[in-house]
Length: 236
Length: 239
Image (spheres, one colour):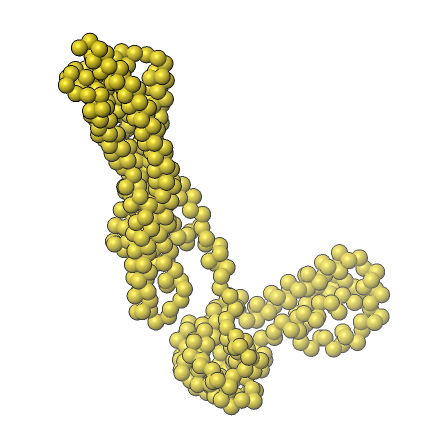
């Protein structure tokens, strides 16, 4: 145990560039884990919100009533997120357009769909905001680690050139410390890639459900728009 | 809002930092050594050049070969207690004793095994003591170390000719002076291949001097290194 080659000594004994590489990898790993945890929490919450909102939406509640419920939160400075923002954008635009009597039903529908599309884009951005970072950690950190390793091995072989008696023991510590960089690169990359795939799949599912909701909601709005215009036509 | 943000920023930060700290500390603290493996790695030398003491050395210190055969035949004399002080008798005793064995064997069988073992052990230890006294108690280790250094020095300078084959053996006699200088090299037993013999001689000549010899005290030098043999025997060749 006395002559043991500790991991700490290996790391501290590495050359400056290898140490920098290791530092970058540690930071990348920490950041990617931060995002993994945060995004997982966010996804779960968004899922829950979607479920509870859909439940309320299909419970037969009056849509104007549902909209007004959300008003309270908005007044508190809490911007609507998730599916609620889609609903609010669409409904707001719809009610605004329906107040102008010279706009026909198709135009009303078109306007509210466009508003919902914008909100959907915003949601997509919000959900997929951090995925590119995970993807790049997953794809580049092995290379960064490899770079550190190659550099470290280069150094230890250069040291070997000056030694008269070249034994395995002269190069082994250098190679060992250089390989730590690769290990760290893989340690950072593997969870990032796994998490990226999982989160991307989950966000795809979520966005599909949003789109479905938009279609369903515009179906309802279409019915309402034609009914509204028919009423107005009769009155005239 | 602020509480929410705290949850969404603080919690993941804490968790990911904690994870890394735990992993790092586990790695750093539980890095159980590959030391044992490293220590056991040293393997047989690819080339064998063994140092053997010559006849001149034998004269001063009587080597083990004689000690070994002796213990067994010894116990024959019926008077067991008296034999114990006897051990010192060395080189000259074997023959007279060897004549006795047959009648003595029965008596030996009668003696119980423990007694026999006790006697043998005692004799062995006293023999070893005698030998150590004769050749200096601390000497073996130093002698072995110097022998190993000489061997390594010669091996590292030995370039074998292409005609060398596994199984060739050539024995060289080497003469040194107390400073470690090589003053004479000669082939005692040829391998049958002159190129091979010459390569071995060249290796010794190239080594030229073994500075470690200076550390050896005079007596050991005279006993072991004034004139000794090196056996050159390649074992690592492909054919």
